[in-house]
Image (cartoon, rainbow, N blue to C red):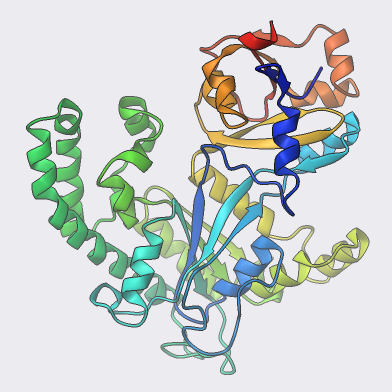
Length: 411
């Protein structure tokens, strides 16, 4: 079973091979989900960024506003199942799914009025799809903090940033509403959205972030899977974006947390009803472990802190979930690859992430499950067992499917 179908007489492996000439093969077709690291200056954003992307790309220094221009990079999302599939199939290389990560300048109180790097920060954060808010949950007089490096207050820090984002959204929504109301008089789709716009504006006026009012699944069912990125108001509202709160602690506090993380978790649970998760992690520990190539030494090092694995894979998996991202695999002797798609997409739409012709000339998709491949020692065993299924254009791709797309040109 080949890993890809043929397109216009040319095997799509050639498409993949062209991408492989770059240092890191990237998934670039139709998919560019991004997350942005935000927070006060000196809370560990740049260190976390370096850990996520696996390189020292962002300067981390002990003074405010070390980051001015955002650092942007693609980050591979750890995928143990992809590793297992590549091993059992004997794939020459493996390419995990990737997300864009941005390290954005530190935010301070008054950012919505231009304080600190406020205007630049707000412009940059509007362009990401998910926020990773890093909150300092450790006391250290040696590391600078905009308030107090010793008597820190993570809840106040979290709220200060949340308030600035909400104020910025209120100003944006107020400015856009007259045009949206006018548009609703002429366009049926805009007319259907108008009651939601009015509800979000009212919520912002009452101090409620838009994500608390969003039923994303229902919204996408009614207005389409890409409504979050294409709607003229939703795409610019920062408080509509999902948030992963990273409670940044010392390495020795990762396993059990501390008083700061407990207070922050309680507050986030009570205040944020939708679209928010919290993970306790150490930016220093994640950066250190990201550079350890020896598996035995890594295990020993983590064990010294009572851990069995880094927190980074859990964080990136949470980001993937918050973004509503699913994935499928293509598998063959040359390459095992994970392709990120929007959750709920049908087979033709999923095929376009490899090549747009696959969607245009879609005929069928050959599908099997990864557990079947692992159980039977590879794709050949699955094929021999008759477990490869033909899926039509209405098939909704399931998380972890192994797919081969067949188009009309290959018949």
